[in-house]
Each structure stands twice: as structure tokens, then as C-alpha cells.
Image (tube, rainbow, N blue to C red; front, side, top):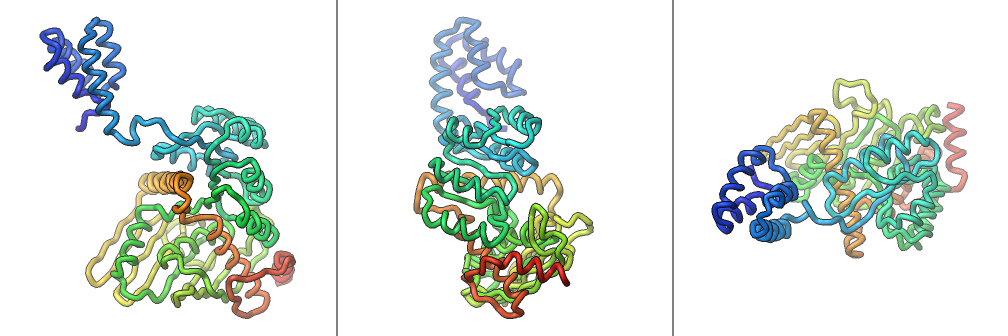
Length: 420
């Protein structure tokens, strides 16, 4: 087991440079502390009670040298972060900071539920605010996480931009309809804030593994991307289109030809038709099959609708498949790999993916030439394809992307589905 915090250097300083007193204290410390690896500060306090100043000086110098070589472990985070929204998904954003070295979480805001805000602030040892604007003005974070409901983005994202927050990570979906999409397109074109979107699974170890196989050409020419989810287009559909694009070198969507059904979830917190099915053509000539809702394949023996997200890429030499809750598989001419995911591994990988996304946003703050892959511009392109599916379902025709949606598209899809 590696010795953290320079403890071994303290032993060495005692034994090699401080005479019989040092050797005696080293023996005591090994017996008392070694099995539990107490931190060096405790060790130094223990030594100070013995008044061995020479040992302290040598040990402190060794510890400082050791710490300078331990990147990201005892360094002070460079950036300050805050969260707007204190619900369940906010815990995923906050827990990820266990794996984040560049920033620390300092504050949260939630205006609708005092108990929720207080519990969240206490859990993570941060300051809670009832007013998000007050929090941003007071704390001046470098990064703010927006983890509220998607119908609040049109209010919160312009506020974040106007207050000059350097970066913002927004939960998906990025919009609820045409009006939101238009407003955010205007914001994206003029803002100085670097907006990323919370599609963290690009950084999931399993999807990374599949993507590396595709990028190395092990599948040969890719012909088809097949991606589906158990929830609707708004709740999960924008996640899986991002997974598919990540396996296809982010080639833009060129055309959609789709149909939708079911009006029950149109007025939900994640508004979209209950189901959708769409053929996608990407600019590089690869085709995709994009399905959402109860018509999608079940990928595991579990009735929870959110557990059936998947993406697969099929090429001339084999295929890769990533399923969020089940695992991933890789079959090529050269290898066969099948990994099954446990619930504990799923939670850990989710936090790890979220942390990697957060670090990628910090990297973007540091370097303008390194935009986060799941940036606002890409998310708006993906949601434009969602609007194209609605238009295709109404017109029964393919829709070229980019697509300028009519302002009444949302009401028209409501009308069509309500009478079907």
C-alpha cells in the first residue's frame, strides 16, 4: 500500500536525521499510526508535543516536497462552482466533485423548497441561497450548474450570461419547444458565457471504450447507428442522439424522417410525444434509427422505463453496443468483449462521467480553443432535429436539417396528437 501525505518521509527524517530521539519516536509512530495512515498534520502535532523541533523541520520539508509531486490530491482547487436547483439530479452533479480536482462547490440555490435547499447545503457543507441571482452576485462562481426543470432555462441562462459567469453547465433537454430553441440560439450567438450541456455519458468508461474501437477503424466502415430509450424524446431522446453522434465523429444530422404518437406526456415536465420513431441521415452518409418511448427495445429484465437506453454502431467488421444500465459489448474480427454492469458500478461510473464533464468545462475556461464536446451549439443542433421529427410527423415528409421551424409547430403537434 502506498504511503500518503509524506508519512514515509517523516519516518525517514526521524530515523536518518534526528538521532536516537527520532528513532524512538519513529518506532512509536509506526506502532500507533501506521496501520491507519494518519495524515501528516496529526503526525506533526504528535511530534510537537515531544518538542523535537529538528525532526519537525526536516519532516515538514519532506512533506512539502512530497505534496508538490502529488497533483490534484492536496492542491487548492482553482475554480469555484455553484448549483441552481437542489433536487435529485443535483446530487449527481455535487457528488461528482469527489473526482474533480480543478474546482470546488461553494453554494447552492433553490427558491421553491426551503427544506430541500437546507438539506442539500448541509450535506455538501456549502452556503444555501433562496435567490439564485443573489447567489451569483455574492459568490461570483466560475461555473454554475443549472439543475432545475427545462422550462426554466429561458429565464436562468440569460441571467447567467448577463451576470458574466464564465461557464455554465445545463441539464438536458436544452429546450422544451420552438420558442425556447429560438431564444437560446440567439443567446448562443452572442454570449460570452461558455455553456455546456449535461450529456455526461460521453465520458462514461463503457461508451469511451466503444468509441475508441470505432475511431481506430476496427469496425471498418460504419453503416448504421441504432439508438433507443424507454422514455420520450425530451427525457432521454436527446441523450441517445448525443451517444450516437459521439460514435460517428459528431457528423452533423442532415435529414430526419419520423413519426410520433401519444399526447399524454406533451404537458409533462419533459414535454414530448409518448413515442417516436425516426430514420436519420448524417452528413457523412451513415444512417441511424432513433426510437423513443414504449416502442423501443427492452434491454434488460426490468420494468423501469428509464433503464432501456442503448446505442449500437454496426460496421463491415462487427459492432459495438453500449447500454447505460446493462453494460457494453464489442464484437470485431479481432476481439470479443462483453461487460456486464452492476448497480454499484453504474453509480460510480455515472459520478465519474459527470466529473469528467465538469473537468472538461474547466478546461474550456482555461483554454478557448478547447470547447466542451457537449456544448450549447451542438445541443441546439440536436434539438433542431427533434423539431424536425415533429414537422416530419405532421407533413409525412423528410425534413432537411438545419430546419427553420414555424413558431406554431408545438401547438400543431399538440393538435394532431390530441385528436389521434
